Length: 197
Image (cartoon, rainbow, N blue to C red; front, side, top):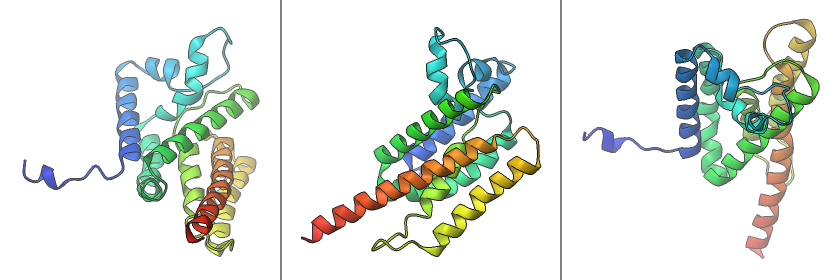
């Protein structure tokens, strides 16, 4: 019991997100994938189906396998806590929800396939991490390299290989990270300026 007191729930949004996704994965396994396909993946369906609007957000909670889950959350658990500490839990939660909505809507519009998983969130967080060093309006070279490497790889694999990986979701997640990073950088720059004056 004494050892448990030394543990710290240091990143509430990221840790809770991870735990929920793990529970959803176990639930999917128990139900033979029924709950996952019904509630935690997004696909084209009738506008009269209320779950269509929920799945646009909840698809990030579903994963097809433990490997799929681990691949996404290895990245999310590395970069997420740092971003949550920098921008705050409420801001990070809002960014996750916005990215989930955008990737879900894009998937419904451009593809007939189902989409599930937090890879779009992972890509958004990775790209957003590269913005943490933006100062005085100067663009870090590391940010450019990360963006080129991550997004370039997805474009290349999307053209050269046909697999079950949704490359477009990775790209959209990365683009969300770029746009959010630019907006947040400008906001913090203005706030720093006003704090000094």
